[in-house]
Image 1 (tube, rainbow, N blue to C red):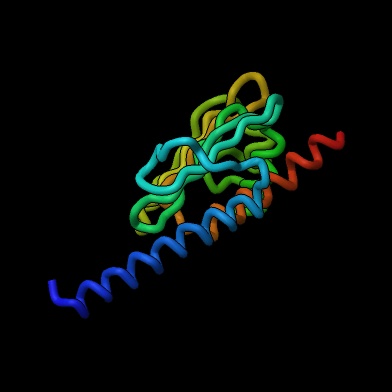
Image 2 (cartoon, one colour; image 1 turned 90 degrees about the vertical axis):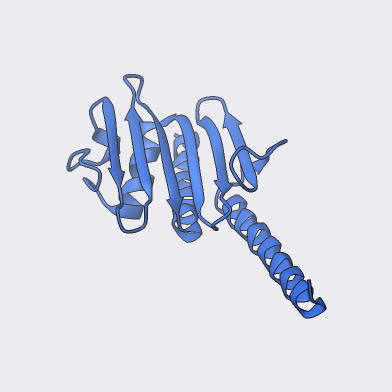
Amino acid sequence: MQPHVMKAMHDWKMSWDEQQFAAQEAFTAAFPALTPADKCQCFGPTLRWEKPGEGGGKVCLDDHGRATIEFERVPKAAVGHAMKETWGANWFDEGPGGFAEAEPGRYNYEDEQTYAEYEFDVHDDDTVTFGIAYVAIDDIVVVLDELEQALAAHRKA
């Protein structure tokens, strides 16, 4: 490989690494409970969290610069707040009250333009397991920030 091509590839790789680090910083600024995972569980950097009574899960980046969030057993009121603030109520056909008032069941949506996938399992115990996959980093940061605010309010209650 020619030296100028090698340098260009090196520069691109360094820029890519910086972008991934910056995305992880944005995720943890929005949701401080996230910590680096021992091993990558997606196709890029992975952050995990677990907190009794609040749930657990992971946030990761793929090799295309898109983010995925997979959280389990998060209080339904907190998920409802985060989704309503991010996308409004009834975006996923969960009803006019949003996920905070959604009946138990599975709700999903696939965006054919962006290939993003959204899946929410509302449980009988007032928790939600959800996955939001292949979305822009800034969208995940907004969800994480709203979720953190709702969980902080839940902790104070």
